Image (tube, rainbow, N blue to C red; front, side, top):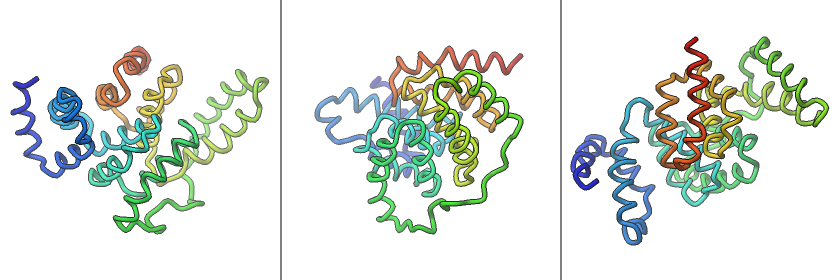
Amino acid sequence: MKTRIIASAFVLASTAASAQDLSRTLPAAADKVAPALAAYARDDLFGAVWTDETLSMRDRALVTFAALVTHHKADTLGWHTELALDAGVTPAELSETITHLAFYTGWGNATAAAEAMAPVYEARGVTAEDLPALDPDLLPLDEEAEAAREETVQSNFANVSPGVVDTTRDILFNDLWLRPALAPRDRSMVTVAALIAAGQAEQMAFHLNRAMDNGLTQEEAGAMLSHLAFYAGWPVVFAAMPVARQVFESRAD
């Protein structure tokens, strides 16, 4: 590990602003309590994973943000909100991300994220005009894909919970997913990141396919898995890997 620190420092020096932002997400306590943890963070996570251009720093910031919201890590979301904004994610996109993740990770996670983000938005002068509209013109609905999804859900679960079936159709796929403040690719990407972080690999195939239909490449999806290993843990990523492999192989046929 030590032999790579000098090389990592050189890489980070070439992107000083990004390095500074990343280092702020590492609490000072790490050096005092677990210096090896701090070294792994600076060397491997910040110096190699975050600088891998297979997935842009902007996307990495958004994926990390989604994982932290999923894990209810409100105490670290302030720094990661700043990191995401500095990496090019807009205030409207972050706002729409927590709105979206409320449905996929739970209302409490999203509201806690809003509380953590509020001081950052205030300090940066973000106003209501910078945030998504409450009732925007929605993106076009892919009626064929939605009909297929609805048929599958109806046939499997209409007799279990009609309420879930109806709200999934009316609120999620005919409204939330069509809001324009977060691009379809990014909306799919944060959904997949949240499912991985939550250990919900069985839900991932549909959304990973949707993400790739929306423009996420196989290489970017693979890089997202590698990135999330650090923020969600190796076991949940390895649980997601067979699902990702099946999706990749099915799309190659």
